[in-house]
Image (tube, rainbow, N blue to C red):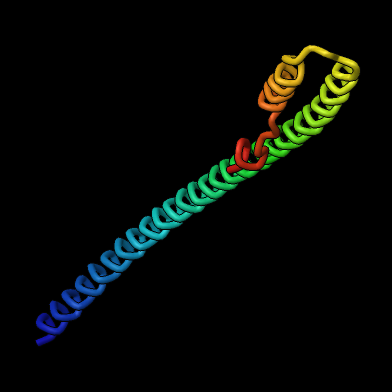
Length: 136
């Protein structure tokens, strides 16, 4: 019976050794898996940071472009309004010139020609709707 006990003990030791080897292999596999997951997490974190920076950069560029466009539009409207004011002053000067030219004029066709000239000047210098012309 002693041989039987010794064989059983050796088998038990051998089984325990296999379990230890299996546990070591499982631990090594778990460690490799953990390292792989950590590498993958670092990669995804880096990718996320890069994407956030790219999206933020594109957003900033879009915002600055929008701001610049609005500034140019406002400058165009201001220029148009200045042109309207110049045209109104120009009309007033022409009306004054025509009135002075008509004083003492005895030509019967002169008033019609003066009106025709005044209307042509008013048409060419008609004020523009600046907000509509340069609005969004």
